Length: 133
Image (cartoon, rainbow, N blue to C red; front, side, top):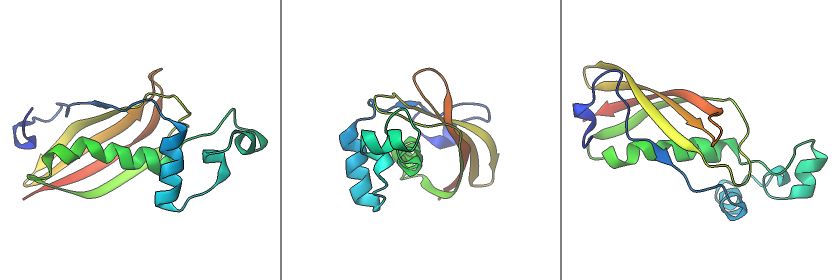
């Protein structure tokens, strides 16, 4: 699929599989976002909070989901983005990003989006409205 214009309702945009989540990814994200909650970077602090280990920032996962639409920046832009966090993302998880076209009205494309881990567990789901030029 080279353009979103060619996509039919019910069809998927090419999935993206991220590299395994690394500690350095989360440290860099903490610096970029200003979210220095230690459950995202320090094992002992995550365990004190009752977690099995550090977890990725939810917004790290959400931000990565937008990568699905970056190949289409010449066609339009993400107009709206609505997400629900469904599960935690841990170190070394391999996240796959998905989008299915649910509706096309005029120049607005409505996608169902989700991120799943290597076990097929949904960690994020939602909707993206993509406005074509």
